[in-house]
Length: 122
Image 1 (cartoon, rainbow, N blue to C red):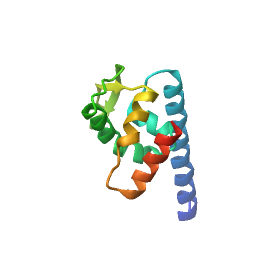
Image 2 (cartoon, rainbow, N blue to C red):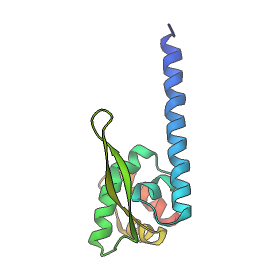
Image 3 (cartoon, rainbow, N blue to C red):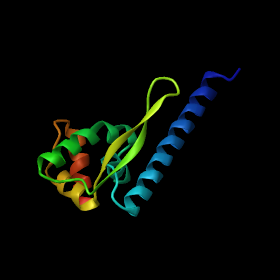
Image 4 (cartoon, one colour):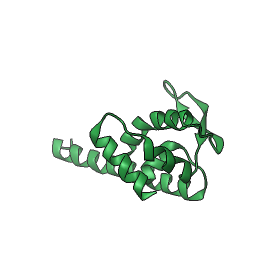
């Protein structure tokens, strides 16, 4: 049986690999065309957990500012067990996301600083 240190090391590698794959997928999606908000945030340098946490709020802010998604796509959403369903996803351009991030400031100060940095980079 592997030791606790070996299990912990394997978990670190597994998590790092998952985050790197998510970042690579996001960068390719944003470079190709319009992409989901979470893809824009991940491609901008946020970790996937933070990006998914704030993507709904950024989408709501974009719609409140009057932006309309460039296109819509579908993604597979995992349900209980092996079941999944297809859900619609709004796809946004870089310019739209940059405009939203320029005015979006969450209450979380650390997240607000991240979004300000992303808005300047875009």
